[in-house]
Figure 1 (cartoon, one colour):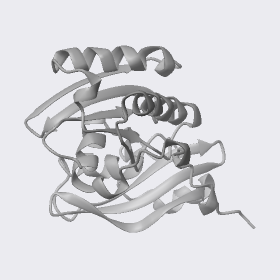
Figure 2 (cartoon, one colour):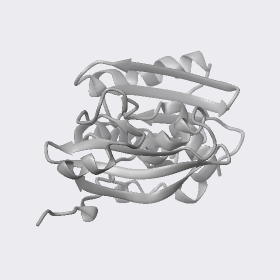
Figure 3 (tube, helix red, strand yellow):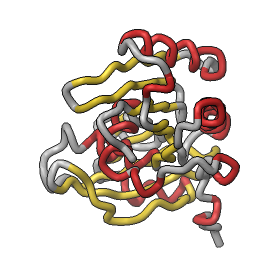
Amino acid sequence: MINSKPILAIETSDKICSVCVYFSSSKYFEAKIELVHSHSEKLFALIDFVMKQAALELEDVSCLAVSAGPGSFTGLRIGLAAAKGISTALSIPIVPVPTFEAIALQLSDYLPEGTQFSIANKVNKDEVYFAQFQIKDRSFIFTHGLKILPLNELVNFKEELIFGNVQIYSSANKKNVCAPDALYVAKWCKAFGEKFMSLDIDSLEPNYFRNFLIKGN
């Protein structure tokens, strides 16, 4: 059960590695670092730092919220492997958090009610992860679900508000929010995560959404 004990959240889906100990929207401890290819080296140092800031031990947290994808293959595996290691050692459950939903939740704190937007992050040189949302009641709803889209089809959405790390649209429309802060991984977990909580770590894998692959003609 996600209760008054804090959540330890991990975000490694993109270039920024971030960690948060989350009690509430008014009490949390967060640290992040942006250093290419450093997640495996820096993640546990960040965890140790925020735990010390919060004056807690790992066994004091209620669950581990980990950004589960889509995102960087290597980054996601590093984050989930760290969570699995802690879970195994201390019997703390894991909540896999959908990365794009955590981004949308973060944007809901800044965008006006009713705003429609998309998120587009690279899969490879030819494809992007793509989803569309709308801000509703200080949260979000999907307007079109997550899928993998051929990169050349993204131009069909160039007039829309798009966030992510794909850089084919104009600078006026380019938004570089391509991963959530660990704070919002924790907030998603608090709001939606209880039914996804698991100690069955062997069944937990990053979500790459390959079954949504759209092939060109």
